[in-house]
Structures are given as C-alpha cells and as structure tokens.
Length: 361
Image (cartoon, rainbow, N blue to C red; front, side, top):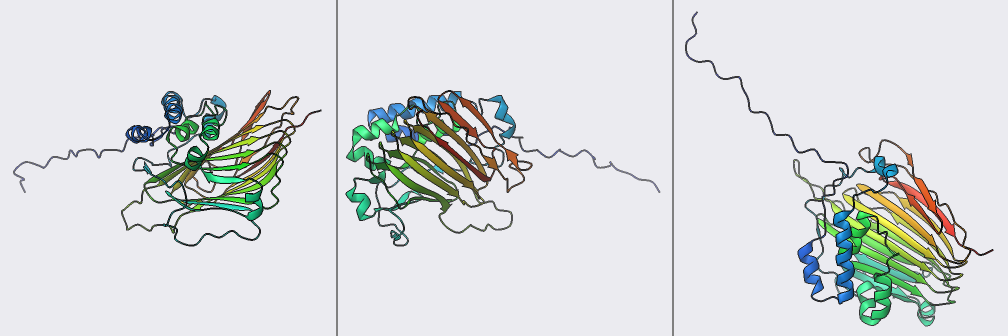
C-alpha cells in the first residue's frame, strides 16, 4: 500500500509555564495613590511618618539577617489580587452584625470587624480610673499630642524589617489602650480583630501604654470575620491579608500580661510584629499562639531601657500546620544585644511564647 500526501507535522508548541516565584517575593505593596489621598486629610506629621516608612519598605529586603533566610518562604501567599481598605471606621458604627456586650469577667472590649468598629467598651471601674480605649484615629482627634508621640515613636516598629514598614506606611486601622500611672486593672481587656474577606487587606497597629506602677492583662484575638467561602470547581477564592504591629510601652514598675491567640481562616495571610519598650523594673509576660492562617510570619522585639535593667532571652517555637510553610517543626532563634532582645519565629503556623522583665539591682 502506498501512502500519498504530506504527513502532519509532529511539532507541538510547548505549554507556557508560569513564572517561578522567589521565596522572598512579596506580591503586595502599599497603594501609593491611596496614601496620597489620605495625605489630604491626615496631619502632616502622619504623612511624613508614612512616607519615611514607605522609603524603607522600598529599600529593605524581606530578611536582613542571613541567619534567618532559610525560614523565609512567601510563595504560599498570593496577594496580587488583594487591596487595602480605603476607609475604615474611627468609632463604633451601625454596621454591627450583633450586639457587642462586655462580659462580667472583662474590664474592656474592643471589636474590629474588617473596616468596621463593632465596639469599644470599658467597665465603670476602668472608666473611673481614667483608662482609655479608642481607635488610633480617635486618639489623633481627641489628643493630637499623644497620637503624634505614640504613632511616630521610632522604636515602636522595627526599622530594619520590610514587613513592619509595610504596616507603618499603610496602616488603615488601629486600637489604642492607655492606662494611667498607678492604675491596676484586675480583669482582662480583650482586643478582637475579625478579618478574612477575600481580596481585602487590613493593616493594623495596636498600641498599649501603661503608666508608672500600673498593671493590666490583655487578650488579643485574631478570628475569621465570617465562614469560609467555598468556590466552584476550577475557581480560586482570593486570599486576605492581616498585618498587625503590637506596640507596648511600659512605664517604671508597670506590669503587663499579654496573651495573643491567632485562629484565622485558611485563606488568610498574617504578618505580625510586636515591640515592647520596658521602663525600670517593668515586667512583661507574653503567651503567643499561632493556630490558623495560610501563612504567618511573626517577629518579637523587646527593648529594656530602665537603668541597670536586666536582659532577658525570650524563647519561641513554631509547629507548622501546612506543608508548604516549612518542612517540620522548627525552633526559632533569639539574638540579644545590650538593652534589647529579639525573637524571630519561623514562618509558619504554630505557637510561640516568651517572657521578659526588667529590674534594678
């Protein structure tokens, strides 16, 4: 049998492969046009602070210390379709989905749900003692000098951390707890962040200031703002982003116990930074648990500024719950320098805990 004609070409066009991401590639950045719009209504000092942080964000790598680069892998965070809330509430509004009430065993409660503020509550004893619980914008409006002092403090957010400067440049919500000198709050104060709407980013600052000789217990909760969204086959639900800086200022002899419980949904990415400045004989006890989230990166800095203060070495560990975050349970490293200590947990979901104190001899 004879074959006639031309055989079809066996050459096929190769399929395009998606570009491979670097483990340190961050697919989210501050919206510069949004920052420019905010500048029209914010104080000049706040615009200057955001601008300086934006410059550092552009210049810094994700990790400046080579000892920690093996822990960095942001490829599980796909934030290219995520945008920051353009406006957020400065006080409780009418959007609350359910009534927020103060429990009998709580001295205070702040509830922030996405761009809304559901409640800012204090019991009668706390209010009578002069305790203040407000949003950052509420503080700027009611006490501009205190707002400027706390929000522009150069030691309140790590200047050598790109993700921390992301929060400093683009924060769109904040909660501020201030306790006057000598006031001791026996019952805990709860600060609850409810987030997770696909395609949205909430960049937050939590500021806790205790005056000389005061004490308090604070419980920070990070929870989903609603049920997980189930997508149709072949479709992808965008991730969400939560960044949080917890900025602690303790006066001489002050004592703070802070417990943080993170139980975010499986599509939420969280970047958290905690910085504490401790005065003479101040005491700080931390218990931090990372139990949820798609990817979590956490950093802790303690600065002991009291005369003859004693250095402390906080410890932390992480137990990953997602195989793409790390290969297994990884111990974090701690670096201490005179007057400061730092803990950098691995990028993962898990738990971390540590304590620090300063005292004179």
